[in-house]
Image (cartoon, rainbow, N blue to C red):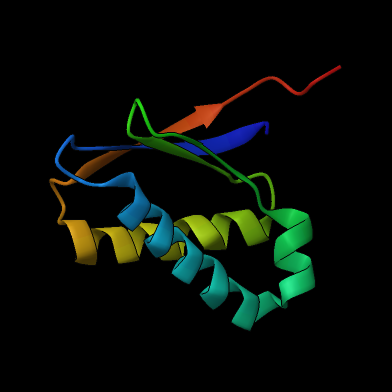
Length: 93
């Protein structure tokens, strides 16, 4: 990932619930782009111990997944339930 968003959830929020919300966001993106395009153009990493999920934002598909996920997370966990940080990484050589 050269561009990504890292979501840090409060300790009281179960990351399994966050993953369920992410899967709904991915499903919504599939409705816009198709399952194949979402599968090819989005990626995420999770760290349950740290309470974080990092979503790829390199492509328009990944950006839409992030937008939908953020909207769902605000509604489900509240504006104060998490923070989101934009990450820029150098491309692999």
